[in-house]
Length: 451
Image 1 (cartoon, one colour):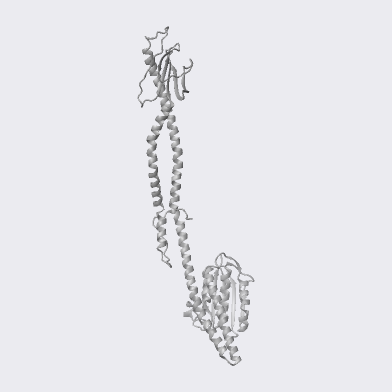
Image 2: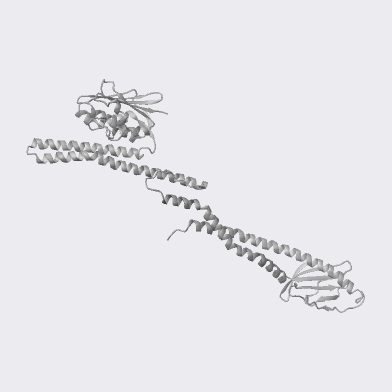
């Protein structure tokens, strides 16, 4: 089942709202019009009664003296079809009927009856007005309610039909207005449909309403994240293809060489070489995955208190087999037993692991590596120094790029320092490459600001 159109939904609800507001208004206007018409009609009845009293009083003054009995003549009035049904009765001061209209055969009023009243006779409802003038004449004049109703219906029909005809036009105007109001959405849809993959151009729509600006801003941020993710994926694929090609090829060569060797010692040496290649392959995969996690922001959700001393000791213990294998003298110096930093644990752990591992891999057998952490007033100072070959000064800026190895054939500095740079950026820190204090080798210094 397809979802209803937004334009149709808004139009329908707008028309329903207008109708819901229009119907009570029409009913109220109709009620007030009827009340006003009743007031006007009652005024006409009262005025007609007064005029009628004067006319009857003058016409019957000679024909019916006060002490005589007069027959009540029936006045036949020829009515036009457009005239209302109005009747009258006239009584002299002795309450004798002296005049009556042919269409007004209502019962005689009581002697004390005066004013307005409603009465039903022969199935017809009448609006009656009875008044006694200064000379004692009792005059009653009446108008049928259906006559008033006919007049009201004619008025409502005359003014209501144009309104009913206007309603479809109003609905069309409402629909057109809503379509005009929603035109930025159509423009946004066309712009997104024409957008090319990989484009980093921000979505911009002219005349965008205020209500849609947060939506477009959020959409731009999401598109930017999507493009970043696509670029990271492409870079990750390139990293994997680049970094794994050589270790895999070397492993295959060593395995084939071991298989072709008849001498068990040479075959074992080939297998050890293949194992070393696989170990290097494993380390490269770890580096690439760590870099991918950092660039994807997996380590940048929420910061938490970190004990840098505990992290450094944990990394040193993890690298203990490599330290023992190369018989490296590793020194650790810290001015406090615990230095706490609010940061990202994955990033900091990756930074320590890559810096210490790179230093261990570059020093000679029996070399030296020192790790020091110091809490200064406005920053935390971290240094990893070794007595290895170091990195030429002109190459130090480039080693932070992916797969740069500072001109050395030794495994390391491929993606390690790029991971370190990302971790440093996550903590708004600063990293420096310089000479170590051993006369030779590299000294890496990281300055992490503290609040």
